[in-house]
Length: 66
Image 1 (cartoon, rainbow, N blue to C red):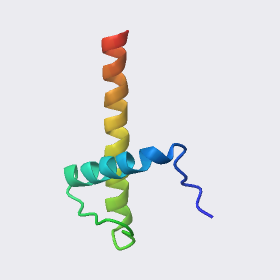
Image 2 (cartoon, rainbow, N blue to C red; image 1 turned 30 degrees about the horizontal axis):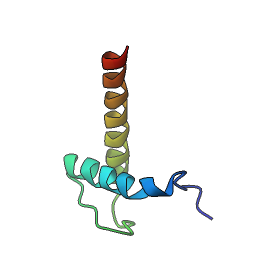
Image 3 (cartoon, helix red, strand yellow; image 1 turned 90 degrees about the vertical axis):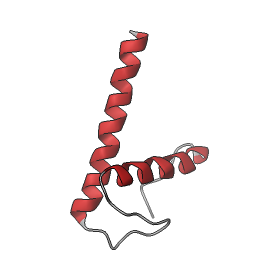
Image 4 (tube, rainbow, N blue to C red; image 1 turned 30 degrees about the vertical axis):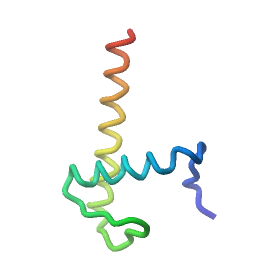
């Protein structure tokens, strides 16, 4: 059983788009569906880019709302 469940099912497509955008920014070619053929380094780069963008978004929201 997967522990990576999306709490809000409607957000799944947005998360997929976000992942693809982050992968594109770091030069990793992802395809729809299973991507078990990418290296751990590539997967880490994508995840790291996603976290970086989320932190930037949060910091920007603090600046505009704080």
